[in-house]
Image (tube, rainbow, N blue to C red; front, side, top):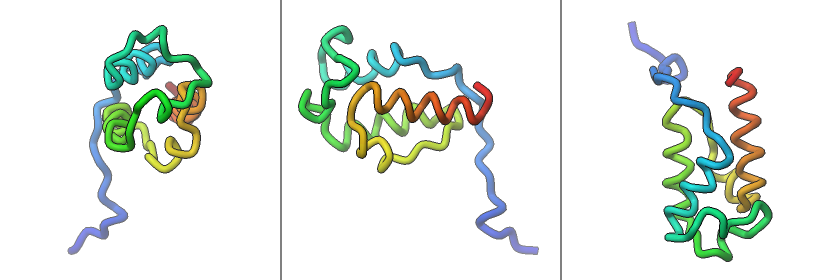
Length: 95
């Protein structure tokens, strides 16, 4: 009996919830900046975050089982925008 691709699920141990301050620290580390230098509405792209680094951040944040899509993050490249996406996904999982 063959298993349909749609029936395959990743088994993931949930990670600790992602906080806004962790996100700020992760972004700052990628930019070699002080976390306090990153404002909520600052364009992360204007601060020097390129798409490859942004993708690495999204992948790291999804390791705990959150279903994150890079394209959604690309639409709102600010800490506040990204935090809204993470907060929504975590709330949907009951985190």
